[in-house]
Length: 183
Length: 152
Image (cartoon, rainbow over all chains, first blue to last red; front, top):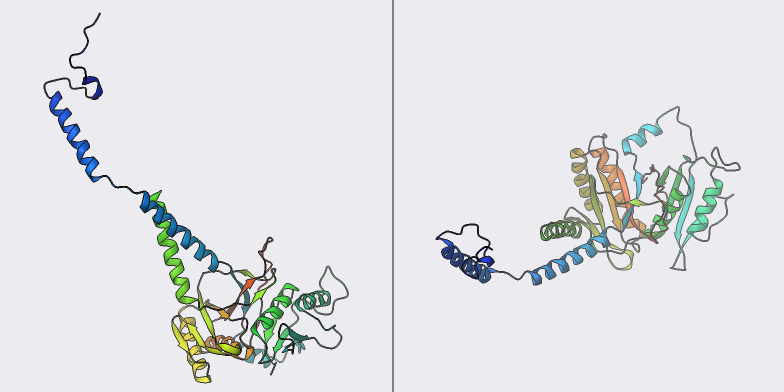
């Protein structure tokens, strides 16, 4: 049998040193616990506020991200002048789409050249233009995808109607779209 | 975790503040999905057509400067854009206009981009992005085609 260690509370202190400094270490440890207890900080409210801020900024940033772009490359004016003076340039008559304000303020009046049906709305405009386009996989079309198309919007036309026509032309597969000539 | 959370807050705070300062408050035109692309943040400047009542506008705003909706104001806008084109010939102009604005007020801003490219020396290729909102979330990939267009 082995004799039990002297002092019943020794086993609670993880200290390998069992020498004469034993009680002094114990006092220091207890003093450190008290100091640590005095400076402890409750961070739960701070975490709550931080998460509230994070949710706020996540939501506001998400609203901005919904914006999308309709891309266009505008030819420089000098390049336009050069193209007009090119004696070898083919004179390709653009397909003109007129956008006029109608008495019904909810939608604009969209007009296509004679030979093409008059669309009632933007979805029908896209369908007519898609049917009028021809490529290798489609027969019966009138215009290639790079045929110039000009959107002639009246000065009083709403911007949403003009952008809607531009969107329909692009969605129908055409690549050369210009604005102007509506006044 | 707290460190990462704070970094996220700083990031979103900066991004939202930049967005607020550049984007004017307006009701953008909405289009059906299919032809538009997500707005890219690379080398672009935002040009706002500031809406007013009855389809009129209160001028044009770009990088904190406001330009009047007059021929003189549009000329100053073109000069400011030309200066940006000289620094970055690949600059894209994101044009933001209210859905109810009349075309007569938006068209000068489009024309200013071509004028600015000419003033910048002709090397710049004006790239214009018409900023819109899609009617419904797009589930398929964007089918945007590079479009050649111009305000004539």
